[in-house]
Amino acid sequence: MTPGRASGILINKATFSEKSTTMSEAPSQVEKPSTISMPSAAGANSKKPIPSAYDVNIEEILPVNPRLFSENRWKEYFQRLRDEDPVHFNQTDLAGRFWSLTRYEDIKRVDTDWQNFSSAHGIVLGFPIDAELPEGILNISTFIAMDPPTHDVQRKTVAGSVAPANLGNMEPLIRERTCQVLDSLPEGETFDWVDMVSIELTTMMLATLFDFPFEDRRKLTRWSDITFAIPQPGGVVESTEQRREELLECLEYFNRLKAERLANPGSDLVSMMAHGKDTKDLPPMEYLGNLLLLIVGGNDTTRNSMTGSVYGLNKFPEQFDKLVARPELISSMVAEIIRWQTPLAYMRRTANRDIELGGKQILKGDQLLMWYASGNRDASVFDNADEIDIERANSRAHLSFGFGIHRCMGNRLAELQLRILWEEILQRFEKIEVLEEPSRTFSSFVKGYTHMPVRVTRKKQ
Ligand code: HEM
Image 1 (cartoon, rainbow, N blue to C red):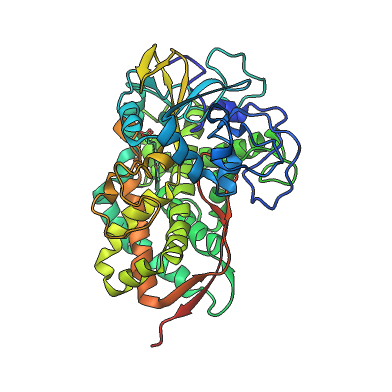
Image 2 (cartoon, protein in one colour):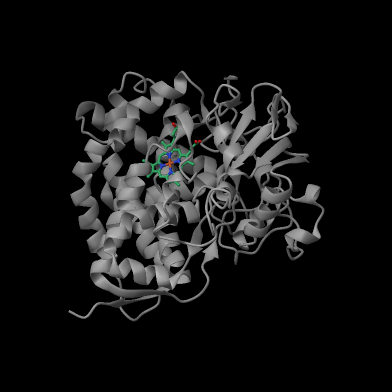
């Protein structure tokens, strides 16, 4: 790995290097400023309505435009790319040369080949790897943005926390907290499912994993949110400096916890990192990077699957009815929702050498975006892929957790949380009605929801 380069945050360091970026991953109702200058926000400056995917020249399609996702127009664009140009080229001033892989098999091929396709330059679209980076970078590093051997040793140190044996121990606590949250929901009143259920449950879970002071748990939500936010007046963060300061507070907080756990070890993630032979002496920015990886990894993704499950089963009510009639389908429903939602729309790799892919010539240093959201809708693998089918035989073949050495470390935990959520929902509620279209995250990376008004009806005793 190239020193310094690898050290992006779980996205990559370019995200932290904008001096004057002006947009955030805020709800779409937040007023949008006039310019956005970061590689992963390409195309978002236009104020014009998004045209039909079939009315633009194919070479002009910029799949990374966050508006395609926040305005829920991504599907037809990716459909066209899968059909007509599955290894699609773009070049922008900020990002340089990059490719979008939209078919299932191409994505899998790249994801399982870390020798040729490196993670060490970052995992979201960033600046060209040989570009001078802007000043003011918080030089954060994390093992999702590393290659072997460093990746493997650091992953091994924390993997035990979410291994099956540990999950078995956690299940009663997850269930207890899920029940508390569901029991506290108002009946017959409109409330925001994202905030009151999805965020609350995933934040509680994180607090448990870190053995984090429970009363401060929303700090974890905040740190998760700002990690991905694109600075914007009135947005999640207003400036790069603000984010930098808040993330340094995060580091300070976890340094205090580390000191405590060095004296009194537990079985939590902070203790594991404080005592693990490969993580105990991590430089501060690597320690922070790995914390943020776990905070974001375990937060946004599961949160958006929880919201996506309620939304999706409202869109396909016959599937909800089937689930009510046959609760034994909960596990396969969970896999299907994770396919359909695809909480992280893509992961980036960087070509280590010139290589041919799908008839296109990739050059060393080119960025490649593996569009899981598109691969999961590839009709050659999934029939009626835009629809939810909770009995789909091959749901588990989805790409949402990635493949290969970086395959999601927390996938079983996420599935467990969703399974328990739905077991307890079916015990309590006759229905959960989504009252209006949810607001979607302004991002082409985190594919999720910022707000979803619902009303619940409890079962009669
Ligand atoms: C539905 C929920 C989730 C989804 C969709 C998801 C998705 C992903 C994806 C796409 C990757 C990268 C795969 C690749 O590059 O091949 C990843 C990696 C990772 N995820 Fe998750 N994730 C979820 C939940 C979680 C949870 C709950 C945790 C926390 C404990 C977690 C921790 C991680 C970590 C640590 C990595 C880095 C693994 C590595 O680089 O070796 N994830 N996840």
